Length: 514
Image 1 (tube, rainbow, N blue to C red):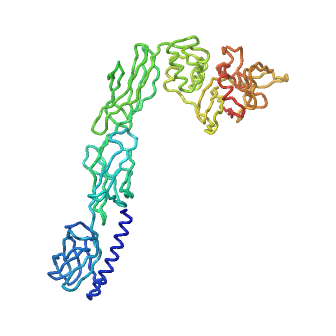
Image 2 (image 1 turned 180 degrees about the vertical axis):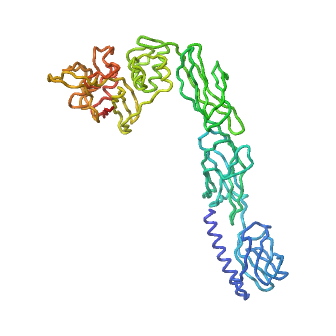
Image 3 (image 1 turned 120 degrees about the horizontal axis):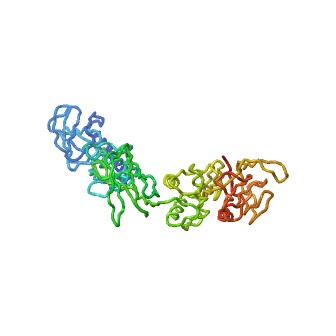
């Protein structure tokens, strides 16, 4: 029987009982409104109740619900006590004074409950959620207890005090007798559920369950390190804890602790000086203590390089560079370990974004910046547009967005601001128009204009401004690392071919801004 039906049945039986007892009392000449009071008006078998009224005499008996008459202990003419008998039921309390039956209020016979609690996990990383559930039933049965108030209690490790869990509130059990809370533990501790007592049910506190909280060790990126030069492995711990952390290096098939340091203000740092080329793996750990569990950071994969790379370089360090630039969304072309013009322009675009000298070479400053790069953001992100283009005139880079996120970053050269002779023989200033445009028409292959030959131009205005390639086809100089066009947006010929057909399509949005 559901709790709702059970409550209806109890109410109906109680109403009939009240009516029957009232009728019986009326027949014997005693009024039902006798002024009797019962305290407490609920309880278990063998508990003691106190009845108050008038005219109590030795020999009076008490009946609770449909129980047999029980002898009462008369304390005074206005007070008597009685023990709730084993055959008591929820119902009216009656005091028998010889032939007179005096009817009192309803006494509720409590049901004894049982319960349990569970945790979604016994170990979790700081800031992750923990789900605590409680379940209450009638003892000796599988009947759930619904509509009863419950509180989540918490005790920190190393303490003896239980408190209402932070950020939680009283909840009521559902139809299945269940209740739950979502919490974010900050330290080791234990949880239990306290089901409050009600008139109908006894309530209980479940056995406690322990949870271990692992601190979160966050490491700054370190992708490359120069041979025989000092680099930093830095990070922070959350929550902000004190103590010591340890730097471990992967050697062979095991991790070896190579350094340790104190945490200062929630932060830490280790210096490393690689002595040979290759790939190194590092991680940081913090050992278990009384308040938190063991913490392990992510693994850093560090490529050790030893030289400045430039046009014509080749090798594994070039491939490392290309992979890193591709990860950062720079237009790198084939990742083949060869430092060609695609790599030169990708490095140049990276230097522009990061405020470095625009020489297209990868020296110590570029290697260092690749570990902690500036990230360009779209000024006009539109997730509904499959592709869109933004031209940043201040940085001299072109951003291709896909579904509202930066997808590719290209080196570009826009208007140089100089004066030139236009197609009509007059003087014009080299300016790239700003605003919101869209690609209106395209020309496949080479197109000869009055100002030079354009390679696969995609026009975004009706006055002749386009995104295009230029030059003799070897990418050696058509895109200088500075603003130098008459007004168009110039990119390399190889880049044009990579995006001409599926990105620079008619209707694609083009935003140009400083």
